[in-house]
Image (cartoon, rainbow, N blue to C red; front, top):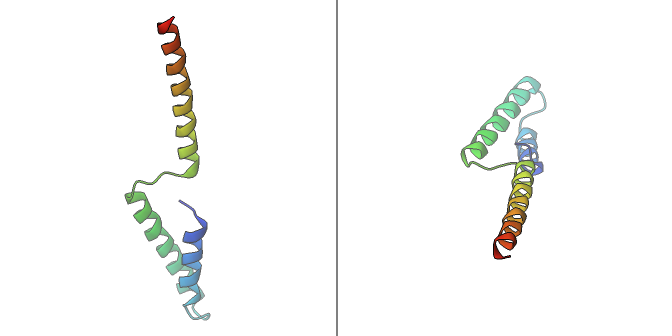
Length: 74
């Protein structure tokens, strides 16, 4: 899961590491990003794209149900 706020958090932590530790900085940045993504995955969050797709499916289903209800009433 990529998000602007997650990337900003990782960058803030990265800036706390001395500039002469590039190898450590890259490894730490990757590890922190992985930890945050794992934590968010455990929360069972969905991406915006997944949410939008499900919202569209729900709308189509609702419209189909309304159409079928009208047919039953007539």
